[in-house]
Image (tube, rainbow, N blue to C red; front, side):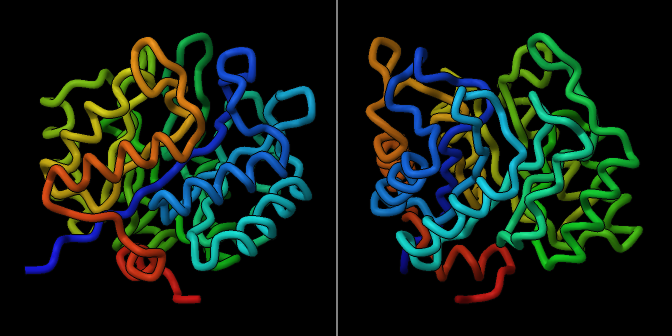
Length: 278
């Protein structure tokens, strides 16, 4: 029997870590392209992109997104490119500006939640607007679930025709003040998703020290994908910083192997997530 393919998603930068936290964090477009290429060669088939200003603050500059996208398309043939529309440090009105560049996918949070020092605000009007823009540009959403109610908000988007009936869903666990990294909670979220949106594919992201633990739980439950990368975790071990995104991808590929599966190729990943081949 051939091994089951699992999509390896790498979130290369995020909006929170800085080079003072880990000097290997890719911030400038050239660094992000090089880091993604290394992660691609290590087994990643999907890249999740935030861009930064030169001073490392979060950016919504569509030109910077376009520069990173063009470089990755050239360096990593077939890799799925996913833009962030996340709100930490970004003007809500600017969060969807990059969608005109038509990445393969974009993140879509379907509700608000407490974060460590802020409320991550996703009012219904903004969520619907972002979903409509994604639909207009032929972009597949990845639904970010920070709370049980966000599953039902995603179902409403399906019912309204703003997203398809088989979305890709990611449970985000371990953000301080939001959903804890608790295995029982993952089972509740997964059961509710299968009840409410039975056609969904899914993954789960663990933040910080929870990254590998949540990945193991997801793999044990047959997840379609796993997520790793320096956006969520800057360490390869408790006492050692990651040398880069590629090292974290290598750890994810090893975990997939322990569960009798293998990293999906870009073509397989596209088919699994309902994306057009390239």
